Length: 296
Image (cartoon, rainbow, N blue to C red; front, side, top):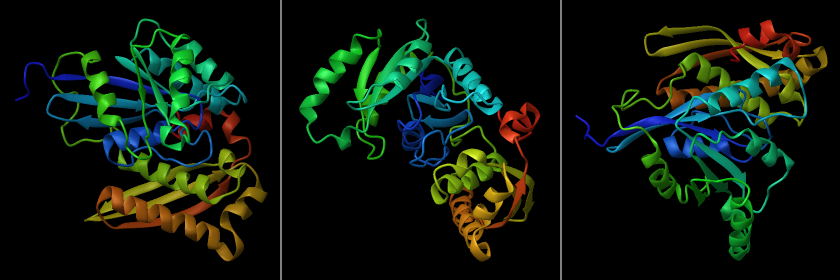
């Protein structure tokens, strides 16, 4: 039985692309549930990560970085996900980079609800050569919005995350856990498999191509302890298909091998993974295709 002061609730993680939202989520949960890469806009879905301790259950919702640059059907769906999430949670973590606040950050700040507690999370403080610059930066940003608290962290190194949790806990409603104590995400293995393949596209391909790709798991079967997964990488143009496959199929083989290894680590069992590439011209502008690929 949990104590009568146990708390449980939802916390949105929002910010412009590439401020480290997914890395923060994975660090807080202690497992990779949201994919990461150095490229902006890696996260496209609303991803839930769950952390349960003896005093609270924190249900973190990692959102796509809010996109203002392109107006495809995919980006419209992602932006709807961000704005809806902000009104469905008990608290909001607004993540920015230390010593950096630009128009992209301001556009996300303008979306933040006044009726929800918002914590400012200043990430990547480990990258600062002069920590003395942080205080005037905090002072300047604190004047832009009535933040409930301001917490500098390093998601990559796991620094100050316990302090962040201490600030979040009082903001959550008193109540019983919303999920099982051993659950780390509400996403199923089929979804996680597709995301791990997509992560490799972002990490192993050039700057432009990953944004024109998506992944559809066409078959996911359990054969005893073995998972058999058949997945299609969707690209926009025939030339992109050739690049994803690579010379003598080497690039696709590397993508599949690294994704399979991550799946086996996350799922705790052997995985047979078969991956191929399909061309679907204009898929990101077709709402039907976007929905079939699982975007909400």
